[in-house]
Image (cartoon, rainbow, N blue to C red; front, top):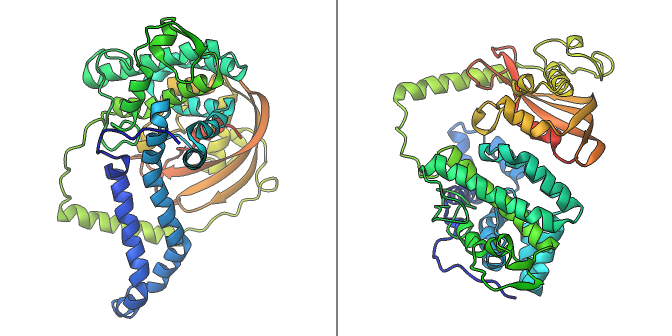
Length: 440
């Protein structure tokens, strides 16, 4: 086994969100251990002990504790093994794949662990993660180039896709760095600040280590096959043996790793936020009253029990469904997709943080994928949301395919707050809209 630990004492597991998760899991575990002794006192105090026991049993505390510990330690173990080889752990990477690669490398050597990663980065995985890249504004003008590079990758033209992906990577960092720091600094020149507060990827043990590999000085002509995407050697004609899958896979992985930093730069989240003021007593009382009202409405709400094929059609136009229902919203959204009307599609879409999705962003995601037909399969309702399952037939870069997707629709009021149906509310939205174009 090889691999190289970071010179820095800072570890990814020490970022604030990981520490908060660790502390929360520790508190839950302590409660689980102490509950048998606390139950009499809690019952005397009017606490619903049975509900707490049910919640802890459903959570499976021991299993959850192990899963959290894995999440905390895998990124550092992964980077210690693979960062010097041109891989780092990042937010979109499948944690189970990262874990398998780590365990394989620790058992059989780093090259064996790399084989796990190379297999993971097939064309389907790259296509899926390219869809997630579209959250970044800086990526939007480069979509067509990325899709062409994906086609080259799928058809094993690695010599063609590698330089393109390297240039895309550099370009989005230049744009995002200018927006965040007012400096025209790229990934491969100048002195870019690639760290961000509370980030697994944009960490001194993450992107900074990856950058040192990508930007390694290469002056001698090399004709032998290389295993790392040396940007300078490849683009300046010094490394000629980059036409292979491992270099191409690492280049894609590096692009996807850059995404988290770019998003934080665009959202002004690179620096630690200032402490927010504590809410006043009046605010706390008002919030409590709102919560009590919400809980009362939630308890009173009853599902419709709608039957697809009997009460509503499986296929139809939006006019055939009652307005204000989740099925009407989904059918309307998909009908606009059939008509390539990205503006009206965006009305139903929200990004994380409840931000609205721009029409041009929708166009970037959906313009290369044609929706040929769809039909409703199932509707499962709760007081504030509905899971609507649809079968889609679509035609995109991977060809014609049919599969099912479940969209979670949320019922919102005019202030973009989730509300109980029948007690306010004006429209349906979904945060899961990327499922529509993700691999089935």
